[in-house]
Image (cartoon, rainbow over all chains, first blue to last red; front, side, top):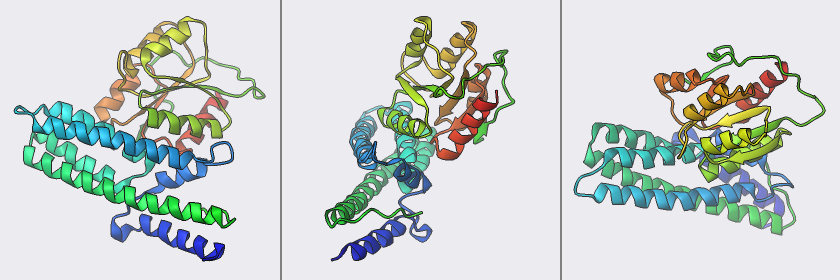
Amino acid sequence: MDVGQLQRQFIDYTASLFREEWRGFLDDQFTQLRKLQDENNPDFVFEVVSLFFDDSEKLVNNMAKALEQPTVEFKQVDAHVHQFKGSSSSIGAHRVKNVCVAFRSFCEQQNIDGCKRCLQQLKHEYSLLKSKLETLFRLEQQIMAAGGSIPMVE
Amino acid sequence: MEKMGFGNVTSTSKTMKIIDTEKKISVLIVEDDLLIQKIHKVMMTKFGTEVQLAANGKEVVDLFLSGASFDLILTDLEMPIMDGIEATKKLRSMGVTSMIVGVTSRNQDSEIQAFMKSGLNACYVKPLNAEKVTVVLNELKNI
Protein backbone atom coordinates (compact mmCIF):
# COMPACT_ATOMS: atom_id res chain seq x y z
CA MET A 1 0.00 0.00 0.00
CA ASP A 2 1.44 3.42 -0.87
CA VAL A 3 1.68 6.37 1.51
CA GLY A 4 -1.38 8.08 0.03
CA GLN A 5 -3.54 4.99 0.53
CA LEU A 6 -2.24 4.54 4.07
CA GLN A 7 -2.99 8.18 4.86
CA ARG A 8 -6.54 7.86 3.47
CA GLN A 9 -7.04 4.71 5.52
CA PHE A 10 -5.79 6.59 8.59
CA ILE A 11 -8.16 9.51 7.96
CA ASP A 12 -11.16 7.20 7.49
CA TYR A 13 -10.31 5.13 10.55
CA THR A 14 -9.78 8.17 12.77
CA ALA A 15 -13.04 9.74 11.58
CA SER A 16 -14.88 6.50 12.40
CA LEU A 17 -13.73 6.70 16.02
CA PHE A 18 -15.42 10.09 16.42
CA ARG A 19 -18.66 9.26 14.62
CA GLU A 20 -21.67 10.15 16.75
CA GLU A 21 -23.95 7.41 15.45
CA TRP A 22 -21.53 4.88 16.88
CA ARG A 23 -21.53 6.84 20.12
CA GLY A 24 -18.04 8.06 19.37
CA PHE A 25 -15.16 6.30 21.04
CA LEU A 26 -13.27 9.57 21.09
CA ASP A 27 -14.18 13.21 21.51
CA ASP A 28 -12.50 16.54 20.80
CA GLN A 29 -10.13 16.17 23.75
CA PHE A 30 -8.25 13.48 21.79
CA THR A 31 -7.83 15.90 18.90
CA GLN A 32 -6.46 18.46 21.37
CA LEU A 33 -3.88 15.91 22.52
CA ARG A 34 -2.86 15.15 18.92
CA LYS A 35 -2.30 18.88 18.38
CA LEU A 36 0.09 18.92 21.35
CA GLN A 37 2.34 16.34 19.67
CA ASP A 38 5.28 17.94 17.87
CA GLU A 39 9.03 17.55 17.37
CA ASN A 40 9.58 18.34 21.09
CA ASN A 41 7.09 15.62 22.09
CA PRO A 42 7.02 13.23 19.10
CA ASP A 43 5.44 10.34 21.01
CA PHE A 44 3.18 12.37 23.26
CA VAL A 45 -0.14 10.76 22.31
CA PHE A 46 1.27 7.24 22.50
CA GLU A 47 2.82 7.97 25.93
CA VAL A 48 -0.36 9.52 27.28
CA VAL A 49 -2.55 6.69 25.97
CA SER A 50 -0.14 4.09 27.40
CA LEU A 51 -0.23 5.82 30.79
CA PHE A 52 -4.03 5.82 30.59
CA PHE A 53 -4.24 2.10 29.91
CA ASP A 54 -1.74 1.28 32.70
CA ASP A 55 -3.78 3.39 35.13
CA SER A 56 -7.01 1.85 33.84
CA GLU A 57 -5.85 -1.71 34.61
CA LYS A 58 -5.07 -0.74 38.20
CA LEU A 59 -8.30 1.20 38.69
CA VAL A 60 -10.50 -1.53 37.23
CA ASN A 61 -8.78 -4.13 39.46
CA ASN A 62 -9.31 -1.88 42.47
CA MET A 63 -12.99 -1.45 41.61
CA ALA A 64 -13.43 -5.20 41.17
CA LYS A 65 -11.78 -5.93 44.54
CA ALA A 66 -13.88 -3.29 46.26
CA LEU A 67 -17.10 -4.74 44.79
CA GLU A 68 -16.17 -8.26 45.91
CA GLN A 69 -15.92 -7.29 49.57
CA PRO A 70 -18.57 -8.75 51.91
CA THR A 71 -19.51 -5.18 52.84
CA VAL A 72 -19.01 -2.95 49.81
CA GLU A 73 -17.54 0.46 50.54
CA PHE A 74 -19.38 2.44 47.84
CA LYS A 75 -17.43 5.60 48.64
CA GLN A 76 -14.22 3.74 47.87
CA VAL A 77 -15.62 2.35 44.62
CA ASP A 78 -16.83 5.85 43.72
CA ALA A 79 -13.38 7.28 44.37
CA HIS A 80 -11.86 4.86 41.85
CA VAL A 81 -14.60 5.58 39.29
CA HIS A 82 -14.17 9.30 39.81
CA GLN A 83 -10.46 8.98 39.09
CA PHE A 84 -11.17 6.89 36.01
CA LYS A 85 -13.71 9.44 34.81
CA GLY A 86 -11.11 12.17 35.19
CA SER A 87 -8.41 10.35 33.26
CA SER A 88 -10.76 9.09 30.55
CA SER A 89 -12.13 12.57 29.92
CA SER A 90 -8.58 13.94 29.81
CA ILE A 91 -7.65 11.70 26.89
CA GLY A 92 -11.01 12.05 25.13
CA ALA A 93 -12.22 8.51 25.85
CA HIS A 94 -15.84 9.48 25.37
CA ARG A 95 -17.65 6.15 25.82
CA VAL A 96 -15.50 5.11 28.77
CA LYS A 97 -16.23 8.43 30.43
CA ASN A 98 -19.99 8.00 29.90
CA VAL A 99 -19.93 4.57 31.55
CA CYS A 100 -18.12 6.17 34.51
CA VAL A 101 -20.92 8.75 34.82
CA ALA A 102 -23.54 5.97 35.02
CA PHE A 103 -21.32 3.97 37.37
CA ARG A 104 -21.08 6.91 39.79
CA SER A 105 -24.89 7.14 39.88
CA PHE A 106 -25.09 3.50 40.94
CA CYS A 107 -22.44 4.08 43.60
CA GLU A 108 -24.51 6.95 44.95
CA GLN A 109 -27.59 4.72 45.04
CA GLN A 110 -25.48 1.94 46.62
CA ASN A 111 -26.83 -0.34 43.90
CA ILE A 112 -24.44 -3.28 43.83
CA ASP A 113 -25.96 -4.94 40.74
CA GLY A 114 -25.84 -1.68 38.83
CA CYS A 115 -22.23 -1.21 39.88
CA LYS A 116 -21.24 -4.69 38.81
CA ARG A 117 -22.95 -4.23 35.43
CA CYS A 118 -21.10 -0.94 34.95
CA LEU A 119 -17.82 -2.57 35.84
CA GLN A 120 -18.35 -5.16 33.11
CA GLN A 121 -19.31 -2.44 30.67
CA LEU A 122 -16.25 -0.44 31.64
CA LYS A 123 -13.97 -3.42 31.01
CA HIS A 124 -15.65 -3.97 27.65
CA GLU A 125 -15.43 -0.32 26.56
CA TYR A 126 -11.85 0.13 27.56
CA SER A 127 -10.80 -3.12 25.81
CA LEU A 128 -12.57 -1.96 22.68
CA LEU A 129 -10.90 1.46 22.88
CA LYS A 130 -7.50 -0.11 23.49
CA SER A 131 -7.88 -2.26 20.39
CA LYS A 132 -9.05 0.73 18.29
CA LEU A 133 -6.14 2.90 19.41
CA GLU A 134 -3.64 0.08 18.81
CA THR A 135 -4.92 -0.10 15.23
CA LEU A 136 -4.56 3.67 14.93
CA PHE A 137 -0.98 3.65 16.19
CA ARG A 138 -0.16 0.77 13.84
CA LEU A 139 -1.49 2.77 10.91
CA GLU A 140 0.64 5.74 12.02
CA GLN A 141 3.74 3.56 12.13
CA GLN A 142 3.02 2.18 8.65
CA ILE A 143 2.63 5.72 7.27
CA MET A 144 5.90 6.85 8.85
CA ALA A 145 7.72 3.72 7.69
CA ALA A 146 6.52 4.49 4.15
CA GLY A 147 7.99 8.01 4.48
CA GLY A 148 4.70 9.86 4.90
CA SER A 149 3.38 12.27 7.52
CA ILE A 150 0.40 11.73 9.79
CA PRO A 151 -2.67 13.68 8.62
CA MET A 152 -4.45 15.82 11.23
CA VAL A 153 -8.10 14.76 11.29
CA GLU A 154 -10.38 17.42 12.83
CA MET B 1 -21.57 24.50 36.17
CA GLU B 2 -18.69 24.44 33.68
CA LYS B 3 -16.65 27.18 35.26
CA MET B 4 -16.58 30.13 37.51
CA GLY B 5 -15.12 32.86 35.36
CA PHE B 6 -12.93 35.73 36.32
CA GLY B 7 -14.64 38.58 38.18
CA ASN B 8 -15.94 36.31 40.92
CA VAL B 9 -12.87 36.56 43.15
CA THR B 10 -13.82 36.31 46.77
CA SER B 11 -10.38 36.99 48.20
CA THR B 12 -8.72 40.38 48.47
CA SER B 13 -5.83 39.18 46.39
CA LYS B 14 -6.43 41.04 43.13
CA THR B 15 -3.59 43.57 43.14
CA MET B 16 -1.82 45.04 40.16
CA LYS B 17 1.00 42.86 38.95
CA ILE B 18 3.38 43.97 36.26
CA ILE B 19 4.36 41.06 34.11
CA ASP B 20 7.48 41.43 32.01
CA THR B 21 6.11 40.59 28.58
CA GLU B 22 9.50 39.37 27.38
CA LYS B 23 9.87 36.90 30.23
CA LYS B 24 7.97 33.61 29.95
CA ILE B 25 4.91 33.29 32.15
CA SER B 26 5.77 30.94 35.01
CA VAL B 27 3.15 28.32 35.81
CA LEU B 28 2.92 25.91 38.71
CA ILE B 29 0.75 22.88 37.96
CA VAL B 30 -0.53 21.23 41.12
CA GLU B 31 -1.88 17.77 40.34
CA ASP B 32 -1.40 14.32 41.86
CA ASP B 33 -2.52 12.29 38.83
CA LEU B 34 0.56 11.65 36.64
CA LEU B 35 -1.45 11.33 33.44
CA ILE B 36 -3.16 14.68 33.92
CA GLN B 37 0.12 16.25 35.11
CA LYS B 38 1.73 15.21 31.82
CA ILE B 39 -1.12 16.52 29.67
CA HIS B 40 -1.35 19.85 31.48
CA LYS B 41 2.44 20.30 31.46
CA VAL B 42 2.73 19.76 27.71
CA MET B 43 -0.32 21.94 27.06
CA MET B 44 1.01 24.86 29.10
CA THR B 45 4.51 24.48 27.62
CA LYS B 46 3.00 24.57 24.14
CA PHE B 47 1.46 27.93 25.06
CA GLY B 48 4.97 29.21 25.75
CA THR B 49 4.92 29.16 29.53
CA GLU B 50 7.62 27.91 31.91
CA VAL B 51 6.13 25.00 33.85
CA GLN B 52 6.92 23.49 37.23
CA LEU B 53 5.02 20.62 38.82
CA ALA B 54 3.80 19.92 42.35
CA ALA B 55 1.95 16.78 43.42
CA ASN B 56 -0.11 18.20 46.27
CA GLY B 57 -1.01 21.34 48.19
CA LYS B 58 1.75 20.95 50.77
CA GLU B 59 4.43 20.98 48.05
CA VAL B 60 3.00 24.27 46.75
CA VAL B 61 3.04 25.89 50.17
CA ASP B 62 6.58 24.65 50.80
CA LEU B 63 7.69 26.08 47.45
CA PHE B 64 6.32 29.51 48.34
CA LEU B 65 7.80 29.32 51.84
CA SER B 66 11.18 28.65 50.26
CA GLY B 67 10.86 31.85 48.24
CA ALA B 68 9.58 30.56 44.90
CA SER B 69 6.98 32.55 43.01
CA PHE B 70 4.85 31.95 39.96
CA ASP B 71 2.65 34.09 37.72
CA LEU B 72 -0.03 31.40 37.60
CA ILE B 73 -0.95 28.40 39.72
CA LEU B 74 -3.21 25.76 38.17
CA THR B 75 -4.45 23.57 40.95
CA ASP B 76 -6.48 20.40 41.25
CA LEU B 77 -8.92 20.13 44.14
CA GLU B 78 -8.54 16.57 45.37
CA MET B 79 -4.99 15.71 46.32
CA PRO B 80 -3.42 13.76 49.17
CA ILE B 81 -1.75 15.43 52.18
CA MET B 82 -3.19 18.89 51.40
CA ASP B 83 -6.03 19.50 48.95
CA GLY B 84 -6.60 22.48 46.66
CA ILE B 85 -8.96 24.32 49.02
CA GLU B 86 -6.62 24.13 51.98
CA ALA B 87 -3.59 25.03 49.86
CA THR B 88 -5.30 28.04 48.26
CA LYS B 89 -6.48 29.35 51.66
CA LYS B 90 -2.98 28.94 53.03
CA LEU B 91 -1.36 30.71 50.07
CA ARG B 92 -3.75 33.66 50.31
CA SER B 93 -3.18 33.93 54.05
CA MET B 94 0.56 34.02 53.33
CA GLY B 95 -0.08 37.02 51.08
CA VAL B 96 0.39 35.21 47.75
CA THR B 97 -1.19 37.35 45.04
CA SER B 98 -0.47 35.11 42.03
CA MET B 99 -3.39 34.13 39.87
CA ILE B 100 -4.72 30.82 41.18
CA VAL B 101 -7.02 28.86 38.88
CA GLY B 102 -8.73 25.67 40.00
CA VAL B 103 -8.97 22.73 37.57
CA THR B 104 -11.16 20.02 39.00
CA SER B 105 -13.11 16.90 38.06
CA ARG B 106 -15.82 17.97 40.49
CA ASN B 107 -18.68 19.63 38.64
CA GLN B 108 -21.38 20.26 41.26
CA ASP B 109 -22.13 23.97 41.83
CA SER B 110 -21.61 23.63 45.58
CA GLU B 111 -18.21 21.99 45.12
CA ILE B 112 -17.03 24.65 42.65
CA GLN B 113 -18.35 27.43 44.92
CA ALA B 114 -16.48 25.99 47.90
CA PHE B 115 -13.29 25.83 45.85
CA MET B 116 -13.76 29.40 44.58
CA LYS B 117 -14.34 30.66 48.14
CA SER B 118 -10.89 29.47 49.15
CA GLY B 119 -9.42 32.32 47.09
CA LEU B 120 -9.33 31.22 43.45
CA ASN B 121 -9.46 33.71 40.60
CA ALA B 122 -11.39 31.19 38.47
CA CYS B 123 -12.26 27.53 38.35
CA TYR B 124 -12.63 25.14 35.44
CA VAL B 125 -13.92 21.59 35.15
CA LYS B 126 -11.36 19.15 33.72
CA PRO B 127 -10.16 18.55 31.11
CA LEU B 128 -8.08 21.63 30.43
CA ASN B 129 -8.13 22.47 26.74
CA ALA B 130 -6.74 25.13 24.42
CA GLU B 131 -9.82 27.33 24.77
CA LYS B 132 -9.69 27.43 28.58
CA VAL B 133 -5.93 28.01 28.61
CA THR B 134 -6.31 30.91 26.17
CA VAL B 135 -8.88 32.60 28.43
CA VAL B 136 -6.67 32.16 31.50
CA LEU B 137 -3.52 33.48 29.83
CA ASN B 138 -5.36 36.45 28.31
CA GLU B 139 -6.76 37.29 31.73
CA LEU B 140 -3.26 37.05 33.20
CA LYS B 141 -1.84 39.40 30.58
CA ASN B 142 -4.62 41.89 31.25
CA ILE B 143 -3.99 42.15 34.98
